[in-house]
Length: 597
Image 1 (cartoon, rainbow, N blue to C red):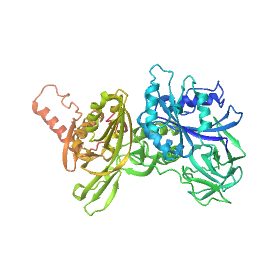
Image 2 (image 1 turned 180 degrees about the vertical axis):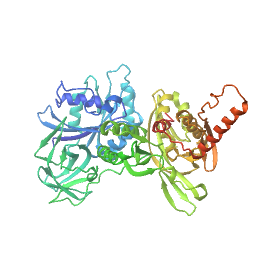
Image 3 (image 1 turned 135 degrees about the vertical axis):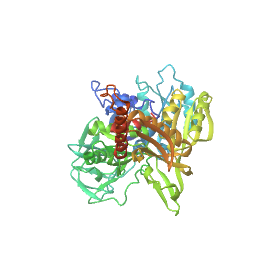
């Protein structure tokens, strides 16, 4: 066990984690040169296309140190985007050390600080690494000073590296051996293994990735899962390299995978403890906290017959992405579907894309919103996840909405525009401090609902990409929120309802009405599109009726003949409008929901 090192790579998005991981794999000859591709560990098409890491990836490497000893490195490459921070927290729980990567051309950014605090909370040994030092714009001394200020290390503790050219890889390997502590644990104690990830394989069932804290896991013996209390036989156990490598047994301190032939995805839970069925441990390992979704949206199959397939797809996806939560819901307009919780808008987009690519499920997503708390006139407090949950204004005492603390790190010249944006989003500036003469940290308290849509994109564009953003939950505060209903010919369309702040209701209502006017097909009768708050109409658009030229057959003759035909048509239109209903096409739903793009 003294020759095992478990560590993860943490950094802000686009600071070069996956590229550096490629060089480490190359250096330890874990992967052949001919099989080497850029971002080797990012094995999802989506990750390659977008150039971001979505899933954390565990891999085992073997390294012979200069003293002749052979070491086993279990490395986890983690995502950098704030929406996938749950992946990072799970990876950190399975490690003793972390490589903290800082881009020498960009310096410390918001997610660098956030991930660092996560690692410090778990008492991980931090090895600071300045990446991309070979670039002309690298500010090595300035960024090194920022790192020293942040973590209080010595100048000589900071390693210089380049993921692209391979500079400093040997020094990183030696630092991992010297600084990261070997895992503690007793191989003779009862088995205790923490599941930190899992994946569904259509041939072999659920494959769980674990870290053994105590005891041994052998092929063929019976194990028990604490969360479900179910027992299974170990069909296969092994280590994680580019492929799964079977072993006869694994001991304390190691990271590996287990296949037990579980076919039902709900029988396994990330964060659960695996123990021996005959000689079980007395208590479960304290896993990670349950995920707190930030954004909620309804996901509905385009064809209602696909409801069960969608349930299976979401369960399989949840195995691989434990931060996704969902529960069934119904909608008048869209039928049966699921209310899903996400960590952010990028997370929602990725889930939608993965459903389409991996499970061939085309879905409709409703307007994303956040979770509120409402108190009615009887003093009862309850959660409001959808606009339909909100009681009528005369039964409502108050609504509380979630607030977040947002950390924005930027250059001083963008402070004014960033403050304007945050004030527009009902933000309160609580702190402003200069990290260096060129970098300033702004702390705001903002309603979560205001940053759900386009906040991050707008922040990036007004700061020309120089602002980095990170946030965490604060509390719930009373707010003046109203339910905005969209009506078509007086009928509510529940899938387009939204909870908005009273000051923004009118502009939001106008936007949706004008968008619907462009998207809805014309009918034989007039269609009124209205946005309403309670009984008050605050915006309206009208789609005029398609008219057939009923007088075309009249060649001359008396005008009364034409009038008679037009009156007859008018009566018909009136009757049609009374009995006609407006169907919103699926494509229109999808386009309306892209309202704020």
